[in-house]
Amino acid sequence: MELATPRLKSIQRVALALLVVAGVVNYIDRATLAVANPLIREELGLSIADMGYLLSAFLWAYAFSQLPTGAMVDRLGPRLLLTMGLSLWSFAQLIGGLVQNFGQFFGARVLLGIGEAPQFPTGARVVRDWFNQRDRGLATGVFNCASSLGTAIAVPLLTFLMLTFGWRAMFVIMGVAGLIVAACWYALYRNPEQVALTAHENAYRTQGDPPGERTKVTFRDWSQLFRFRTTWGMIFGYFGCIYLTWIYTAWLPGYLEIERHMSVKYTGWAAAIPFACGVVGGVVGGYIADILVRRGVEPLKSRRYPAALSLLGTAACTVAAAYVSSNALAIAFISISLFLVYVTSTCAWALSSVAVPTNCTASIGSVQNFGGYLGGALAPTVTGLIVQKTSSFVPALVVGALIGVVSAGCYMFIVDQPITAADLDAATDPELDPLGVGANRKP
Image 1 (tube, rainbow, N blue to C red):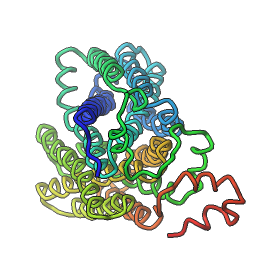
Image 2: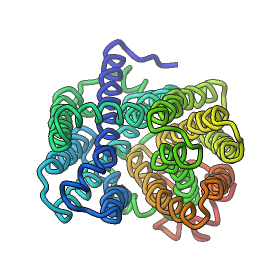
Image 3: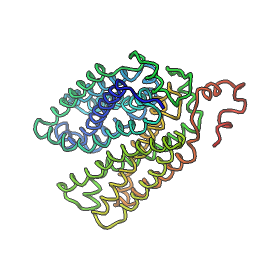
Image 4: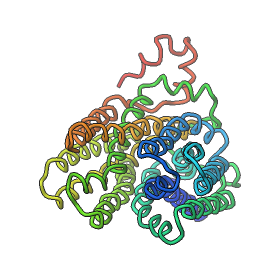
């Protein structure tokens, strides 16, 4: 068993620390519009419908930008792509503090979505590049916990900045902060080929990976991923994970105030508790995956089984939260839901490091994230429509739970086995696979 050298451990710590900081900034930047919503509407003369369009502009741009972004990360490397992404989304934030009308703001939100797209595919590739297979789950959990950590601290931090300096200055401050993080990432992080690694260090990084893999992704490799059931299982599985996550992200304060009749002051603290549990869940999910691998469970199964079971638990707790009469119990069930959904999220991203050849790690991660954020983009709208129609959040939460159950089944029964370089070659060569890829990819 190869062990990481002190130099590799230092590289790993720096990379994960930078990914967490960038991820926290990523999620804080997403929340700026929601926090400043009333002030922006008043100053720019926007309607509630206009704000809905601005909020959704980010989600749709982010979702569709995932498709090319992962391949670009695999092609050009995490150092360059995350620097570019951070710089673009920080520039978009800065513009947000200078806009004068709806059209300018809409463009800024689209740029924000495009710029933020490389963040998590980059994290998946960094973990694949620098960590041994048995250590990748926990490393994935560490960088993935930035999403719930950023969400938890966004509202109090942004509220402080807005009340102290104004909403426009809040946008500018976050934009400048992001540009500083971009400069730090470019200055401190290196791709493996940019470091003179020893034979022992390379052996540690690649132990357990299929030998002789290509390091650069091609368009053919990317396009052939869609011919495998494992890819589609990851897409539809993550759809339910992010759908449930965004029900809570978009509607938790409103749910507590409207359905549970909590005061605005109490809601702020109550809504932070579940997302703090999500931070813990993200790390625990990675730890579970690593423990299973070390105990001899196949890497793919060590990810997909916890992902499926945790998503089923999230669905069950979501239904329980919908029907209990006690507010304290509702918050407890929602906290467990977010703990479990972030276990699923971490295991889903950890799948990216074992489901495909090295040169497709960010590609499969971004394709999966595309599916997830289709769910993320739909969840706030679908939930709002159901609540408007029924005057209750209960059916909306039940619908989310049912989607979670279906997605759990996708992880359990559609995600099949790793896609190898040979499989990708066979997908385009009938002589190597005369019956077609689907025929020889049965469980």
